[in-house]
Amino acid sequence: MTGSEYSSLVKKNVSEAHRALFDEYFCYVRTIVYNNLRSTGSSEDIEECISDIFASVYFGFSERAETGEMKGYIGVLAKRISIDRYRSLRSRAGRTVSMEDEDFFSVSSGEDIAADSERSELQRILMDAIKSLGEPDSTILIQKYYYDRNSREIGKLLSMKPATVRMRSKRAAEKLREILTGSGVTL
Image (cartoon, rainbow, N blue to C red; front, top):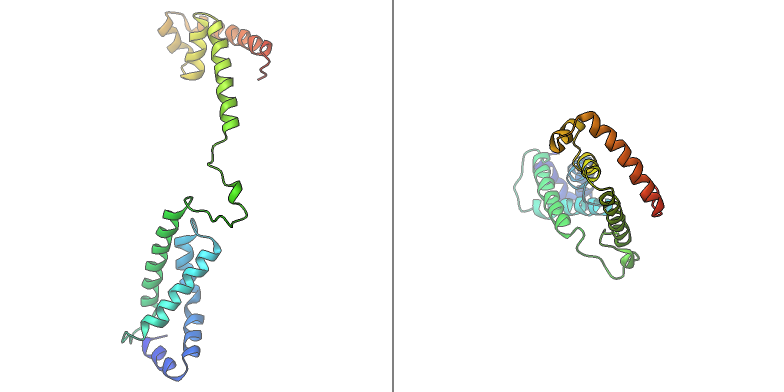
């Protein structure tokens, strides 16, 4: 549809002109809006943005003397409005919640305090158990499991042969398992 065709339809019947324009360009506008809002907007946000775009075309087009193809004009308008809506949604994301919303009291910060506390306590128990193994076993386990070093690297650090480090690591892990089981921690 060209601008002159749309203008002549508007002169005859405004609602018919709007319906014809909507029918012709709806899929095009929806694709643009969906591509810009799919990661942040809900289906209601997408529909509202599409409505805003067509309202802008309906009310803003009569001021223009557009005679060429309307696809470019509508495409640019759709892109700009949907990008503005994307920015608006991103800036409001996670900051506002209506008190009338059913889920208002179930909104959380994303932190699980109980799980964090339990994890922290488990880490403390584990470190105490590793330290109780004494040297060099505690250093071997820390270097192996926390710093992800291999037997050769640990051997250089402790002036030991890699085979000795592997054997001590195996024995230290078995002792650690016994200590943790005695403390009530199961792995």
